[in-house]
Length: 203
Image (cartoon, rainbow, N blue to C red):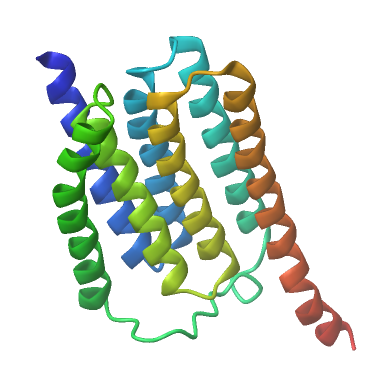
């Protein structure tokens, strides 16, 4: 019973952090929310994977957060300024989108549990929330950092669901490498995106 309660707390944390990442304009808050999101995902993954494998996923996620944070911190505000061009941008609209994701998740989770018994509704709900949140994030931004955050969120949701049906060490390791690769790619794109501005200033 206690495990179920903590699992639902993790699901609530996932919803809150995914929403915070979607509506926040401050990259520090977004990366902090991503770190907490990985902690909540760790608990759900640990229900089906050994502790060591679950911890590896958590450490890989936090390494990605640290990589993106250090890269973004090294850029000036002008270089790292968000370039969102997609509309609408309103906070209310984005919260409504996450509300729709939550409603779809609430309706789909019991059906998925019925089709694949043993996964656990909290695990399914957490995974679907992250996948839906990641898709929404990708749909409302054109900023490099936020696009990477959307991809990482989506991948975290897939990892939660996949861990419930498959516990292969090799696949777990490959998914951790993919997370790290996305972090490195995001850092590279952030730095590359600032280069033209530096060239113009030198000229």
